[in-house]
Amino acid sequence: MRIALVLNDDFSMWHFRKGLISALCKRGCQVYTVTPGGPYVKDLEELGAVHRNVPLYRFVKILPDLRLIWALYRTFRQDRIDIVHNMTVKPTIYGAIAARLARIQKVVALVSGVGLPFMEGGGWRRRVLRALVTALYRVAFRITDRVWFQNPDDRSFFVALGLLPEEKTIVIRGGGINVDEFSAESVDSRRVKLIRDELGLGDGTKAVLMIVARLIWSKGVKEFIEAAEILRNQCPEARFLLIGPYDRDHPDAIPVGYLERRESPNFRVHVGFREDVREILSLADVVVLPSYFREGVPRVLLEALSLGKPVVTTDHPGCREVVDDGENGFLVPVKDSKALANSIAMLLENSSLRSRFGKHSRCKAESEFDEKSVVEKIITQLYGLES
View 1 (cartoon, rainbow, N blue to C red):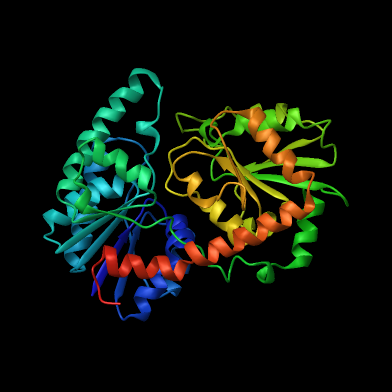
View 2: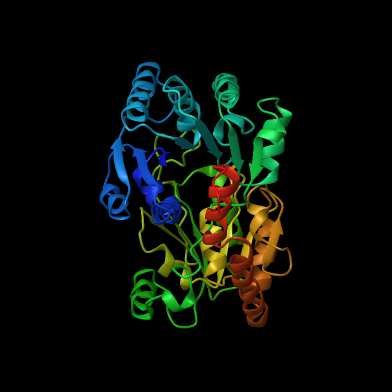
């Protein structure tokens, strides 16, 4: 069985799908990872995958998109692929077209969130983009056999738009988390101490942590800063840390330099990509993500659960999947800085509550989001292979 996994970058393929790749290779499948080239290609090949480079550009560009379809078609034909698994918007659309042109027997897709085109606002440009993406999705879903959604809200949204019938869909919550890799026992305490020093966290300081893959407004950055301001005097021992890279090309991007100008005694931003997220999360007293971006299930929240952390996030599709409100964290309304601050304060001021919530988070990660269980569902329910 030859299976092609198509994604828009090698880092995401490695970070999010290495468990799936390993499981498929152990079953004797030949796995092809199809992304643009990058530093994680070698890691993917060490898992047993064969890597194929394809050109893939962000946003809509006619000629590059046509070149992408041609590159995918050629790869699928030459490697005699049996199953194509497309992930994220462009692969889901153009990968489906290329796969059908190549006469692939089974084409499946992951829709990991509604994404920017369907968010409110954005003016006429957003409306044009929404119309274009809607039309392309309609074509792609018609020629895709099965579509995986990571939360029921996203499935209902796409079905209500008439883009695909519900019987063609499947909900597997989240992408899974390796509960052994993200565990308290796996963390190097010496490295954590070095990170505490780097981030300026002295003895007795409580860390309220927000980590994002990209610094865009819809992750709730403004609300996080406002919560820090509200709690400056009430919780003087707390430090609010925002970590992530700027994304200059994104329509929802935060202007470079804006966050640095907002720094204060209790709010710090650390701009840039980090590979030590596990260790950074391990030192957090509270993990926060006040997002209103329509994503599947935020990976950082699954990592926080697995590390046994209390979570404060929004009562919003995708985010609400990880929190049993009042048991392992709190759900707050979107764009409500005061509610966010109140929930954070309750946790900062009660160590036994943080401990109880953290234990529930770990149990929830093990019982609902263990990567092994998610991968098994992908293989059997999405691909239709025997267990």
